[in-house]
Length: 177
Image (cartoon, rainbow, N blue to C red; front, side, top):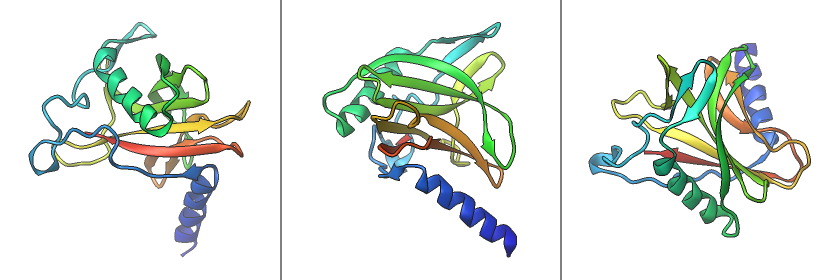
């Protein structure tokens, strides 16, 4: 019982950290039966690890979809830059993670998605175990000098994207199909 209360408490902290407006519509291009369409960028390589230097190799497919999602939430902003970052998770355990991170021209919005490194190639991390699973990205938008940054927390063995604490921060989740 204490374990369930701890999990419930931890999850509630995730939701308190930022106002959450979840959305599934995003940039979903569905094929038949809700599976990813052939032009989905989820299955394509995002970048590569070149001896510790992370290079993005497929930005021409990702950028238009992420800019559309950003414009759907904030019509006056576009993406200024992309980069692959490596960080340490918070929460139940500490481990390395990789994230594709985009920043808007105004610097008020950051978009992020978890990546998986296979060999020396980065791919979007899938959140479903179905054959052609889904990916997820978040948009953190706020005017704080510190905070409202995409971060990763492990709760009950699962990685969760969240926006770091900021009084003026909104988190929007989208699916990648």
